Length: 314
Image (cartoon, rainbow, N blue to C red):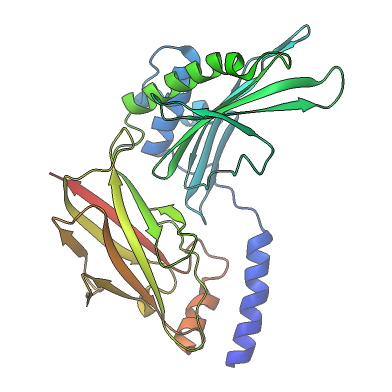
């Protein structure tokens, strides 16, 4: 197949891939699934519901239990509250993994404050669809590495936002406490693409967004950080284990401490500084091998490129 035909076919296939939704609801239950489910159910019950009790059926009982294999992301959400007479106090508790935070200010919310104790951002907005359908919406959230905890609930529209936020924030505090108890944040690895102006954050083995240059190799400076259960940076990393994945992995190169490393065997960084930085180098987009790798990967679960990072602690 000619280079021109390959490129045209690749573009068409990529468009088809982008508009095709991905679901993995029947995938085997993971340890993260159990910890996230236990965090939500414990908060709802206001008593411990341990991760080991979580089953596939219980997780499917969540309002949302979604995986996106291409983004290596997940959403776990549980609705609560009800409409009683003229009172509407419906809300949800949500945990997202490897999903970017919504820009709430652009979405019409107003920042009430950032709570100094929980570290949560508290926002509010008025919703007035009709005389019978109007309420004050309170949102509380905080990002821990690649995990976001959020609680949102409707309150009476005439209630002052500061007063309306009290119960919603209290529920968030319980959600955070159970997330810590069930070690939802334990050993979290965050990668930041420093070579991009917006410096996007992602989790280990999450697909890296990349645009190959036709004229030169593409260098991606990546910062690696490890976080504890409280979302604080860990400085007790004994070793980082690195693995380059994806359809372009065989054409990729990796620099650690400025030196190229052998990707045919496990890459280890002993006693790393936290954060530490590595450089991933991708081939020119006009290289036949790179085009073949991208073309053959279309429609498969493998991303073009990803960096998997594991950590061992002292």
